[in-house]
Image (cartoon, rainbow, N blue to C red):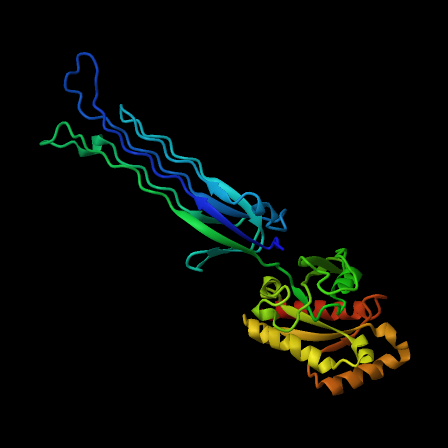
Length: 340
């Protein structure tokens, strides 16, 4: 399956136009001298972040982008017209790499931000530049320089305040539906989330944060198992991770501590300092317990899991506990903003 958060393209800037060898030819001007004009500069290829785009899907069909070549110089010292630049819109959050070297060329993290990925060639010089006292009829010109040509790798990394992670069917998509207007597909089978989703959670008037939902992790995800690293990258920009755990696993004789360790180990294997990111444990499906028993369930889980950080019990299906969790997330993010 081809995912729309990755794309490979080839960009070709325009070569510079050639300089012209020409001599002035007019009646009654027998020794007009050289008048060859310069070539025009080639056009460059730019990428520009556009907040109206949210996938790289268009690049599955159009993979080659070329700017216009500079026009050649002409007689009468006429400079050739420069080639037109070409601007290719990409989603905000697109990371641009050189496919051959792996070098990161740029990171388009804001609407309107532009990045030159292939520079046009310079226009050549006409023979008028080589006229001298000892060379009245120079027949020399300089051709335009070659332009840059590059194979690029585009990677879309969602820009979100909060990232949701957990094993398949932990309830991440259901949680996103409960707290935002996002409508990811929800069903009872692994890897329901085939594309990363983004939702906006609004807290009161004028306060909000964004949440990214990625497909469920399995053991070996950091090495590419399941949907692998294609979506782990979306957590790299987040400020807080909410680790959802399905408490129904207790009734299936699953070890919740082992489930948590699986995800923790995958974050460590992937790197990018994800293990240093603030991570809260969110135990889902509280509706399996009577409401009066839930505080005791939280205390028992904290002890049995040996979890030192924040721990919340919620029901994504009914919405119970989600308001308190979102309020706490908003306060945490605002506190971070104030400390910086």
